[in-house]
Image 1 (cartoon, rainbow, N blue to C red):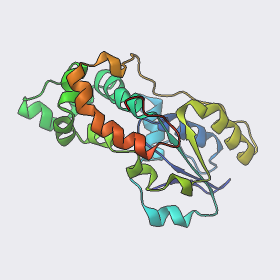
Image 2 (cartoon, rainbow, N blue to C red; image 1 turned 30 degrees about the horizontal axis):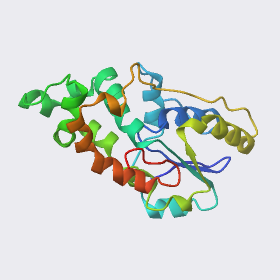
Image 3 (cartoon, helix red, strand yellow; image 1 turned 60 degrees about the vertical axis):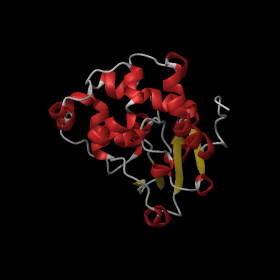
Length: 216
């Protein structure tokens, strides 16, 4: 389901871990109907409350055919690695899962290899992890060609310029909710890399117009 801004006529399909915190913060600058929810500890939570990220619905997308429809996509490896560095390490989301705490079969502070080797199990027991590792197409839809524009996460400056032009006011590029640490695919053990290859291959096929698959 897209996030619609009636004036100046925008429809944004948010993808978790693909710059959506940054985009939502920019949209709040130009949305005349934006009302900040009750204060929270972190700014990005406020914007996610006002602009929830929901899965794709084709009928909803079509209702906004006259709007500037856009989405933002991220390199699949970087997106997946950020689930660990941001949601597991920074946000401690595994600690918030009652199922994980009660069952005690998986560590709540796993190292990267343990986390990714058990990714499906973690996703079954943590709705937050499941939400953030779902394929891009489940949020952006089956056909990226249907958008007026698809931005990569390294094109936030360009997005801010386009939003500024459409809104008639300056929009400041954002870099919100960045991980405090970094993790690369090469940091993982060979067997962990091998287990992730099928998942990443599907993502790179879907995003082939925007990213080359370095694993081919």
